[in-house]
Length: 153
Image (tube, rainbow, N blue to C red; front, side, top):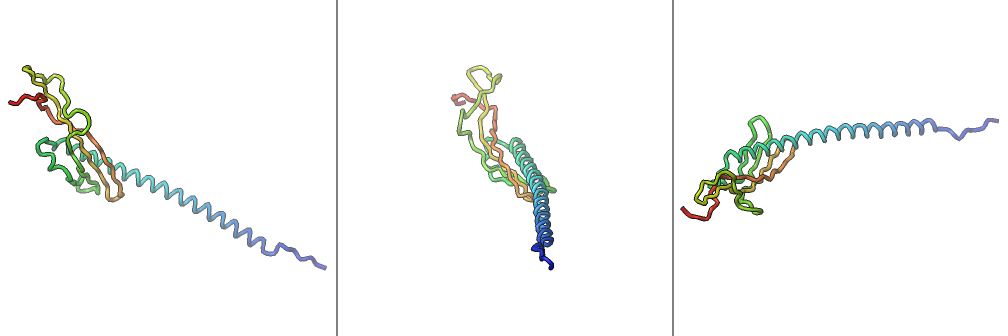
C-alpha cells in the first residue's frame, strides 16, 4: 500500500511567496532611488528660487529711491533669458517696527544737524517655474543720508 503525501503543491506556494518577497524588495528599492531623485530636484529648485530672490534683492538695492519706491512694487522680472527663474518685488514700505530713522555716526555737520538712514522693509520672492519652487526674502533697506532733525529749511 502506498501513502499519499499532503505536500502536493507546496513547491508552487513557496515559489509564489519567494516571488512576492522579491517583488516587495524591488518596489522598495525603486521607491528609495526615485525619492532621492525627487529630493535632489527639490533642492536644485529651491536653490534656483533662492538665487532669483537674491537677484531681486540686489536689483532693489540698486533701483531703490525713497521718492519713487511704490513704482517698484509688484515688479516681476526674469533673472535672465536662459533660465526659468524670476523674482517679484512683493512689497516695500516704511519700517513698522523700531525707529523710522537710524543715525549715521560721522555725518554731523554742526549747527545741530543730525543725519541718518530712513528705514524700509521689503519682501522679495524668487520662483523657478521648471521645478515649481518659490522662496521669499524679507529684507531691511536703508536710504540716506537724510536729515533727522525737525527743523525746516
